[in-house]
Length: 195
Length: 282
Ligand code: SF4
Image 1 (tube, protein in one colour):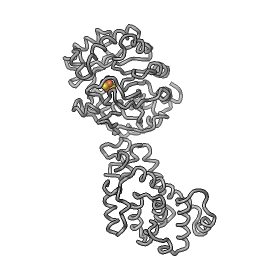
Image 2 (cartoon, rainbow over the protein chains, first blue to last red):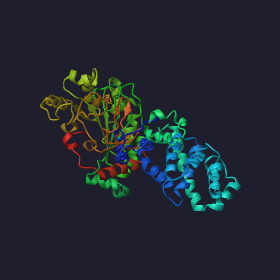
Image 3 (tube, each protein chain N blue to C red):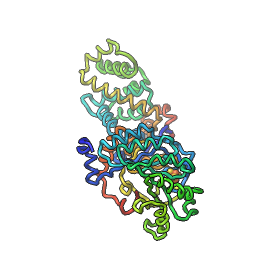
Image 4 (tube, chains in turn cyan, red):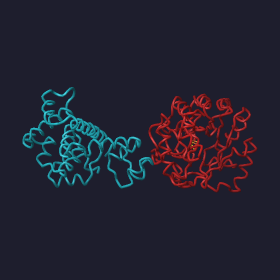
């Protein structure tokens, strides 16, 4: 069960009405609507940070899925496992980003290995980045791409903590898809009943 | 009005009549009574949801700066808060204030607590629903009628401007209300200071299936500030089954007051004309 009230079209504030006009907007909007003035700026930032940009969708999904795995966010791992598959990541790549197998078994392209190590240092550690991680990433990736991906990582970390802290439920559709694709939904044990 | 207020879109909207000029403040949600039609499910056991005096003063000051023209203070029962009169007096240095009360806390020497509000910029609005004590008290609690009848002239004697608000489940101009109108006039209250309004089917009234159903556009869009955020109308921050209704929530941010005021103004821009005049909700 989510730890806070998830609003729907009948309970949502009038200033959030437009977010519910097209049907169920999902638990993140339903939770954020408790503070309706946050919806516009927060979703605007998330949309810009996670949506299309200069970075390819493949590499944005690296950042989102890897960050979510590092922060142990069931909701985002579930959701972005399906997104990553949809944008063309291979099954083994998704499993490696989820932390279920060694990165080297799935990624051989040096630029991508450098990028994932950089993501790990950005999202999974504190303090300055190790020089070798930075140098390797900077050798392949331009400043503006790393800036954009840092926003992707930051927005994902917010969503990770938001979804985990409030125990937002994974939708039944996503869980079904994951099971169909052979992904472990065991980590969803305590959310499965809440969808 | 300052130059800032003249230029403010809020002042313009108030001048044009698209935005009501009054800002309401819910001081608290608890009450010594538990009326059957209470919008906020108030009772002695209610969660207090109390505004700080400093917040109320900041709202009053900023309301004036933005171009609002009046303030209203309601609850719960505001006079349960010992600092209420002094705070309202200070608010009245910015804008005229009407304070709503059940007037049951003015017995004996406690009348002097209410008498502190004898001020040209302040009026005290007291609820009285029937000229029949038993009818009034059925909805509002034992001895309510007697306490109100005693308090009103004593407040007026002390220079307090008193208004009476009657909440009815019947027609607003029903002849059955004439004896009440006579009673109110006999207490020294001017006819224009006697409001008759319908029960609005929200809060406890909704649970009891009382009153008129009202949508946002039926409710006067007066900006309403509470400890839980800013709402569309003083009928907005209602409580049902212990849970605050959020359907008329504008913003959780209450200060600076421009944040909820602009959210309200934005909604009014896209709102079809309402019929609050027809329903008489005020
Ligand atoms: S209607 Fe007013 S007096 Fe009656 S319980 Fe509610 S707040 Fe108290």
